[in-house]
Image (cartoon, rainbow, N blue to C red; front, side):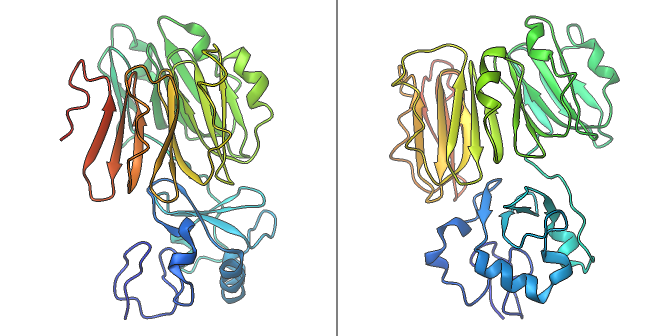
Length: 329
């Protein structure tokens, strides 16, 4: 018996881990993309995918396109076909389902915080909110599977892939009536962004729409103050914004091997496969001083500060501390 170095499953008897597919014949040090960073895309080598498909052909061949090359989303417990983007439930694979059921499983959130309100989804998929005076209409929201909050507006992703929105200051951020097949949502200060099942992005901001319509194979999206980030399947990152603060202040062209992204008000950060962090944007309060961070598994960008989670469970922070937001020791 052995313990998987990727997902830490114990007492494995077969040569392959039944949870994350790691095989004893793989050299773990040569496959850095197998590092289990929560919520990020884990690349599964084509060689291993073909070997697994040969053993479980009905299950591990994509039912949508027949592809045999997959990416692993460990936190969501599913595979993503690298050819067409279809999702396959890991649980269905290893419970003997034949064939496995394609499913949409993108990062989702059960809680969200705006400037003056907090929202949460109940187990019955209804939305609760602390500011019923301004957001009384959300009491009718049902079948909500994810929630996102901007400064003054709130988004709800429904089971059917549509998005409902409401706000009391910037109505344009709530123009989501025509959104369909959405798997993940993000709310910026004054705009909204959604990731579709086919790996494209939609935004409510007309200026940014001209850029995002060219984005393909997107696996994660993050909306910030006046910017939107996209994480592509190959680990590169795209960025678009409404206002320009200088072409050299927002540059992600040299970001590679990225596994997670976060957008702040005027800065953006990303985690690389080796657990280091990159940043771009305005650094007037030191919010981009993250280059010395190591072993980071999650990152969040705020108004003028950035927070990182170490794999040992400790937290680091940099940037403005006017309200004690960096007191994470």
